[in-house]
Image 1 (spheres, one colour):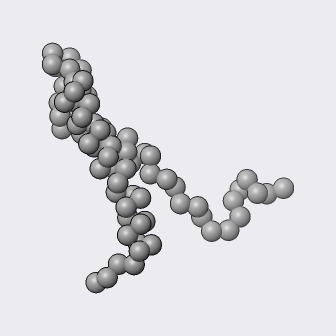
Image 2 (cartoon, rainbow, N blue to C red):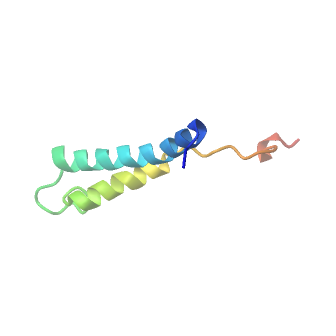
Length: 74
């Protein structure tokens, strides 16, 4: 099973923001995190990493649909 370059690029555009977001979430926990336990996101490495991954997933660029977009109507 071989993948073409456009397929690899498409998957990289979808996966890399999630991985980078998760790494950023863990880095936030590690360097800035809350030691008292009162901060629900930054006091737990699992929650902080998952939250960063979700934020990264929200930054995935949307692909353009084929055809005219609704903004092109006159």
